[in-house]
Amino acid sequence: MRGLQCPKSLYLYKNFIQKRDPISAEQKAIFSRGNNVGTIAQKLFPGGINATPQKHYDYISAVNKTQQLINEGVEIIYEAAFQFEQVLSIIDVLVKKPSKEAIENTLPNEGNQNSKIQNQWFAYEVKSSTKISQSYLLDASLQYWVITNSGIPLEDISIITINNQYIKQGAIKLDDFFSINSVKKEALQNQLLVGEKVMLSKLVVENLNMPEVNIGEHCFSPYNCDFMGTCWKKAPKNSIFEIMGIQKKDLFILYNQGIKTIAEIPDNNLLDKNANIHIQSFKNGTPRIDIAAIKTFIEKIEYPLYFMDFESFMPAIPLYNETKPYQHIPFQYSLHYKKSKETREEHFYFLAEQGSDPRKHFLENLLNHIENKGSIIVYDALMERNILNSLKKQFPEHAAQIDLLLLRIVDLMIPFQNRSYYHPAMKNSHSIKNILHALIPTLSYTNLKISSGSIAMIAFEALQTETDLFKIIETKENLLEYCKLDTLSMVKIYEILEQQ
Image 1 (cartoon, rainbow, N blue to C red):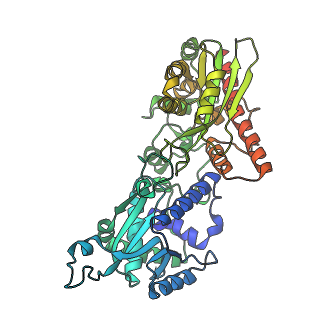
Image 2 (cartoon, rainbow, N blue to C red):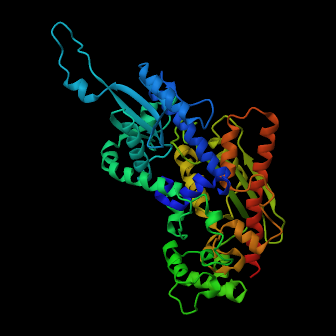
Image 3 (cartoon, rainbow, N blue to C red):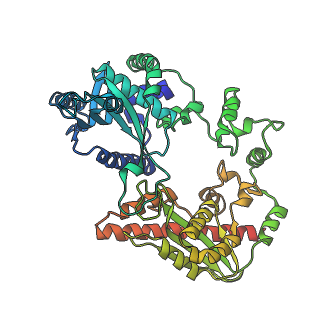
């Protein structure tokens, strides 16, 4: 699968794994989530035996154990391992059972109401996603190729995904929570392709020389490559890839034409207005400030001001009744309050306790902290709006109050998104961290143990099962510190706009 994306990535992975980029906390959380979902999916087929080896990389042991279990007549195997032509396949669940067609077509023998039905093998690959991607289909096609060529005829191969329309009511009902979709048709169509790609991948790995592959769109599709730290070293400082708002394919057209830095882009180019604001600001070394546009933005804002930020987490397996898989569950907010332009800001906050549904306490505390007048300033309002609308449905008795909050929200991101205010140090992002770095470098997320919303999400989800009291206290303190900086940053950024 890696070789399909880029042969150079495959070569590096097999021969120079030490060059791989560090795995981020976010990526580790995705891996962990996938493992958890896979373990729960095993309950769809109870009573199986796990073929996972004692040592993580002892694949031959796993292959031998799988074959032993098959020979012994075991009919449900978890993490069944097969190897064919040096290619390893580990399927999440392998089940031997009668096919639907066999049951429907079997007639009772004389004197026997239950004729013996021939059992067949079925393979199931579990994904923590809610839909089947082309990558998943190719992955299943490779699984089918290895398993069937290892001597196990598969009656069917299916991908198990999460049903994103499932709503939790009490205990998780696995048959409703998971969706099982046969992909045998697609796997059969891809068998010739798989055989060819396996052969080509072997040649890549065995070659003494690394493939010559230039950077390109393939570095990001279907996944961000984890060898970009190696392959992108030649990308110069202030490269064109730092320009915001240009599609990657257009950037690579420029790059392949020899235009590799922002300084090399001609003034009479065909790029859009916002891209040229970035380019000219970089070339001039000065910020671009549209005083009139900023004044128009400021005029819409009324004191007192509430600078508001929410944190949420998205459990794949719903923890609370009336929630769906991957639904944003708010667990924390920070509020900085300014009564007038001259007064100092005050800080209010909420952080949910672990182990209980936080939504009601979150909403009640928020409504108590925000009065009925003044603007509510957020940065990138989409999540806050979505969460408030979701809470409105869950707690209709507060719908009128929530609607008033929604009407008062002002998105501080707008003047930066529209390039009404652009600073060269913002480079290719108008995230609050980049703006803070450009405008108020004395404030920084760098030294925080929780330094992003995704890490906060991971930390709070981990709290739900944490038993170490000291770790619980430390995590809560880190969450409070991070969220507080988000709203304090908004205060300071707004004050700069107000001075223009």
